[in-house]
Image 1 (cartoon, each protein chain N blue to C red):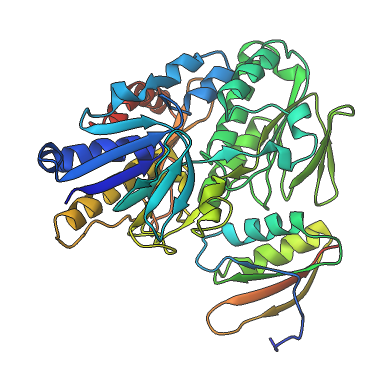
Image 2: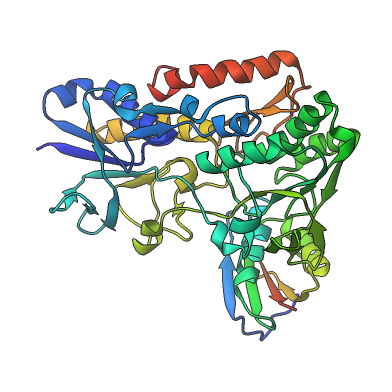
Length: 80
Length: 381
């Protein structure tokens, strides 16, 4: 993945959390933000690669980008 | 110089730890070198797993309550008070009843989970729960008069206490209505926030076929956003609706606000080293049980095992020795699969659970443990 210039409205740092912690943390933050807001999720759990994509699709949100800086993933999800 | 250990919270973790410290440090306490204080905002210790059985009329709320003073070693100073401020720099606490701050050399936060149903509009008015004493009693009255319609169990908050309890509830409800000849008139639906029926994939893989066999409908990727009590409808963030006649919700959970105010973690959960249970945000502070953000379930067995780890580490530190005990993620849980059968899981950070085949023997083992729990609280089992 290439580096994006997305400016998130909120960041959830779920590094170190076991599955399904990162996805649940993302869902929790998405409850709090307004439509159109972008949430950045940081996770070092491999399962997040499928969990986050499946949920964002199911919920009608948009997964704008997935980055892999250093030893974790950064997901950028825009709330529908 | 007396070393002051303050434990905040008289649930499973705090009570087991207080007794553990009294046992390990008995001579130091008797000699005036160590003081152990347990602060709880109620005179009673509450064993929450009883509430699942209260909902089905199997137990009474009083079965889950005992005075802390009956359970805790006399060498522990039990104070019924509520902490109102934590100052980790000054190493002191403010409480509701005390005019002066309470100083500590070692602080253990075992403040547990609180329910936050108000985070979901309509949930308090439209839903029931068995995660509180009053909720379990109210749900019992509803269940006793519920003879037909759609029973919906929705896991709304995660993480939540006892991750197996929602599965237990629908398995028990299925059996309870079946035994009473009402199952054909009662539909049961279970909703869960992610793409499977439990957070742990191994437990989810085991539970799903059982749910299918029992005609328990499942809605996954369902994160309840609001409840309309008038229309009896539950709406999810994902845009789907479920109509209900009786809604049982697992409400959002939070720790106490003081944790976040003290800079120790978000949502009331303390960020800790998952092996030593030492807080990452302050010196001489530990957290255990639901309060500790370790990624393992918020379960009594976790609090029990973690209390032993913190007890050993604190005793070693007070005696000037290296602390060697480390928490390995050990979790143990019985899972009711009906009114007279249960499974059992045991796992840790490295080894996943492998649910045992449901049996009546495991069901009776769970009931037997519920009785002998009071020995655990006393630090004897």
